Length: 69
Image (tube, rainbow, N blue to C red):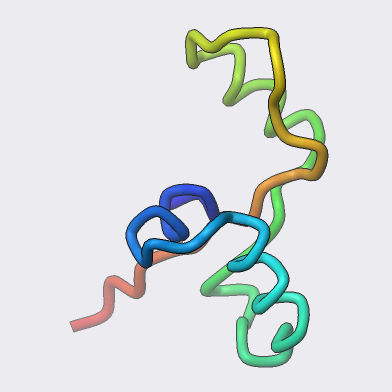
């Protein structure tokens, strides 16, 4: 799930969510969250039809769901 999706779920702006993540980065282990690399972001965006206007200035964070039962 991208940071923008998670922010929408919690009803906050993406920048607010990312600010909270950066302030508490030690609480987000690598097996729970990571930041996309530029090439990964470009590949993802090439699969999604979007407008060229606007867009993100920073690479998004991706949050993973723990699938252990």
